[in-house]
Image 1 (cartoon, rainbow, N blue to C red):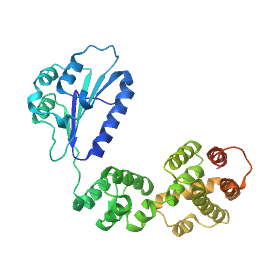
Image 2 (cartoon, helix red, strand yellow; image 1 turned 180 degrees about the vertical axis):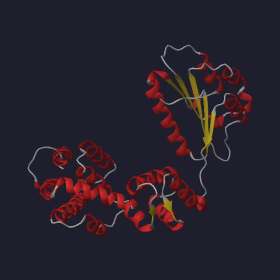
Image 3 (spheres, rainbow, N blue to C red; image 1 turned 120 degrees about the vertical axis):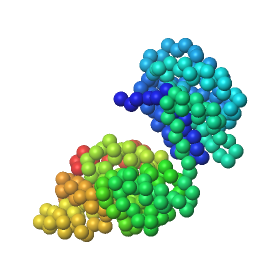
Image 4 (tube, rainbow, N blue to C red; image 1 turned 45 degrees about the horizontal axis):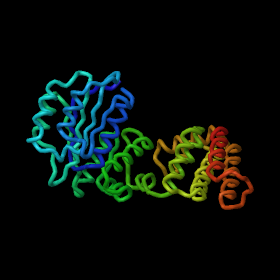
Length: 326
């Protein structure tokens, strides 16, 4: 179970990261106390006086109470006196979290920093990294995840993903899952795994099908469709991945050593091991049937089928069938 402090102050000019921290805290709060245990103050309703009134108000909620306050970068020191007095007597089962999306003109007031510090609260700065410092930041974040990156590799990742820190961090986490702790990533691996194309997205879906995880495959499919990916494009690249798996399974059944097969695959070691294991488990015959089913689905999606079900329904049913057979 997570433990919570009485007060938090999250501030800085990385507004995306601050929004992510707010979402995460709210999710933790809901899992701890349910929606009835959370009160959110934002916009014109987020004033020091409103927070003080909320802290003093009686509540019938059971368990820890959370008050999330947005927009404290608009506050000034002279408005804080009523809130300071109230914070000194904050109940033990209450957490108040202040979020300040700062810029050059708007900053969280110093007296709020002092009030949170006196409660032994948690004060975190989420600052944007300057563009010329971003490769160094990527290398440092990769090191925390057990990955080794050279500056050229870090710059290649930024080229593929963009300069948003939270997006880069998510991509590093994905690379860590593929490559494993302690791996040294080169530019070829980053190009292979991080290129923003339907090809690589569809491969993730195909890998979920090959692993026999219908639930994950369904979630991947729905996510990709919600992002605007077209079904024929997804099916094309999925079929390419399954064909690679069939070739692996055929080679294994013919007695070819796994190490020799692995050398032919242009992918990180851990990802190659997983694809070989999935192909071996599924077998060449099952993978051939999967390719045929995907081909039938692709034909139907292009208007060649006679079924009455919509293409998404047909695709989800097919995903369920081929994942169960994998």
